[in-house]
Amino acid sequence: MRGSVLGLLLGIVSVSAFLAAQTKGRTNAVPRAADGKPDLTGVWQGGSNVRGSWQEANSGIGLGGSGTNPATPSPRSASERPAGEAAPYQPRAAERVLEFYRRRGVDDPVALCMPPGPTRAATQGLFPIQFVQSPKQITILYEYMNTFRVIPLNAKHPDDIVPTYMGDSVGRWEGDTLVVDVVGFNDRTWLQGTGTFHTEALHVTERFTRIDKDQINYEATMDDPNVFTKPWTIRSTMMLREGTRVREAVCAENNVDASRFQKYEKDGVSFTR
Image (cartoon, rainbow, N blue to C red):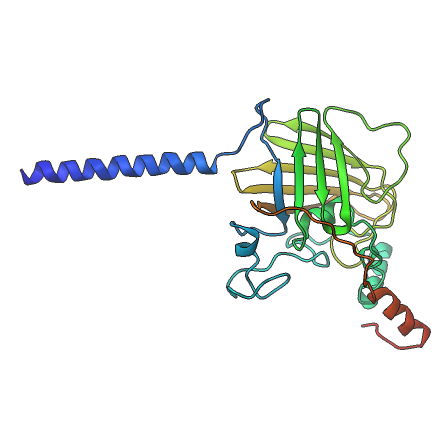
């Protein structure tokens, strides 16, 4: 009798564990669009690997944190570089990067409220990013600097490209990964952190892979033969932030940093490192 009861209990536990696993699998599965492709639609936070709502993921004491949970890691700022390989600048270009650093990043284009470029916009963590997906194109809305990208799928770059901050993007699916080819840049953005400049020869290949309900793995390979010795690849993650929306963010309003440093230079105040 005792053996029968024990067997029954074990059976119940096994069934419960199986059902829990099935439920978890359904919950964490990659959402898919009607065409079977991973659906990237949603509001995301770059530069973070913390799951949960915006409030939960930004409860630390660092950048944009509420301080309610000091143990929560902070997302990346737009002035940080990702961990991993250093930017492979040619010697003369590296000297220019160092000069930007010595000037404490006051020449940063985003300090003047200019668009950040796609790789920097994707990896900063202070502002949300919204994907809107359809079978023919993907639109990305960035609260950071109030900018956007329209990415046609299975299309070619137009012949009349004018150099811009965010470049010209076209996308395609390689299995479950969205691959975006970006060309047509001006030379007025920084790629990742202080001083990481480029020229109009920049060519970026981005890869967005949604690995489950909550996470997109982001990879960007940046190639600029005018300043790099080889292509530079960075990797980061984007985390789903349900209940969050992209809002208006007007950088130019009350932006006093640029004028402050301009006054320092005019008055002969030394602020370099």
